[in-house]
Every structure is written in C-alpha cells, then in structure tokens.
Image 1 (cartoon, rainbow, N blue to C red):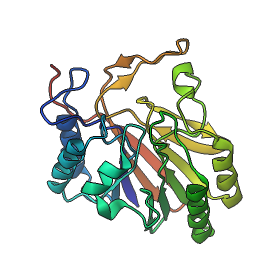
Image 2: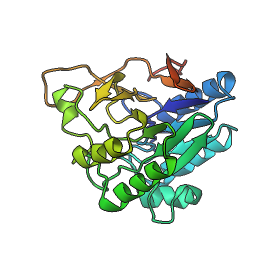
Image 3: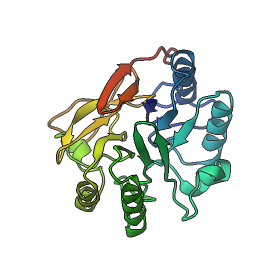
Image 4: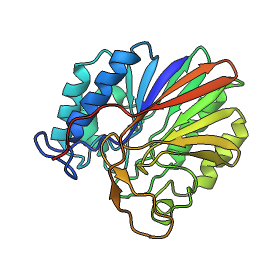
Length: 255
C-alpha cells in the first residue's frame, strides 16, 4: 500500500501571494510532481489548512486545482479553514454528522482521517462526538493496523511557540489510541516543520507546509517564518513494514 502526505497549503485569493510566495502555484507544483512520480498512490492526504483565510474563493481555487488531477485526494480541516465554506465546494467530503472525517481501507491497514478544527481557535479539538466516531472506527478495524491523520499534533515537540497550539486535551485522544492498541503511526501538519518521534509509544510525523515554514526556535514563545524548501512524504507499507521518504518538490520563484 502506497500513499502520499502533504499539508498546509494556505491558499489565498487567486492572484494574491502569502509571505512573498504563491500558495496556489506551489500546491499545483506539488500535485503535478506527485502525479508525475506517484500516480500509483492509493490515496493522497492533505492534512488541513487548505486555506489561509477560510473564504469561499480559496476553496473554489482548490476545487479547480484538484479537478485538473486524477489523484485520489482526501482533505482534512485545519485551524485556518472554515468548515461551512469548504462544504459548499466539497459536499462529498462532509460526513453525515457534519464533520470532515472519513476512512480508507487498504490491503495493509485502515487510514483514519480526523477533523480537529475548533472553529475560531488556533488549537485543535476532538469533541465527544468526534471522539466517539474515532472509537467506533478503531473498533471496526479490530486487529488491523491503523494509521491516523490529523491537522493538530497530539503531543509536544519541545518548541515553546508550537507546543501551545496543538490538540487540546490530548489525553482523551490517547486513551482511545491505547484502548485500540494497534495504531501504528500518526500523521499531522500545523507546525510547518518536519518533525518525527513517538508520543506515548506511537510513532508520529509532522510535515512542512507546501508554502512557508516555521523557524526552528527552542527559546521564543512567538513563531517566526522561514523559507526551507516545501516537501511531501511518500509512505509505503508492506505487512508489518513501513518506509517513508521525504521529497522536496520543485517550485516557482518567490516575489
């Protein structure tokens, strides 16, 4: 089973730029690179902050960009997103309970895509309804391997400015994860940094943005931007084995 992970497109009004960069052009370059080299991926996952502003025009441009690719794409919500504006353009992505969460069952396990958006807040949230949904999907998986995708990181990365904006009340999330006992990896975004490690025994990976990055700062409690190359990851799973590659895709020039 092969899938691709990218995050934090931060689309703005078409024609406008963000931090001297064109988020739409960068996302399109990323998707073109994936389609050129990884068209055999079972699914491509974008873990939130699809939009910078959460406005309808950004989701219309996202819809147009995705319509030009044949890649099977799953979209998650981030704190910059607006669930209602997104749903107008992507009604097929909305679950019956109104949240943007779903699953993908592949030959080597189940992928679960979570909605951690707490509208109006930078931090993420899994309310009782979403936690119940997660528990049900984990129970359905039984003893199959599970891979979780979410925008907000569920644990610390030891960068003060970033540790304050992750998932709120992560202990209830990890209770569900521990109860199931077969979650193999957590994939997240939000921090605009490439970070890997383990939270409560579960391996995790956080990706850079397809647009701009956050500076590596172990002291300040305020974030600052950096311009390290954007990337995406290619994940290959064969039974009990998982291999992950990180690829810095070519982009257009900055302003």
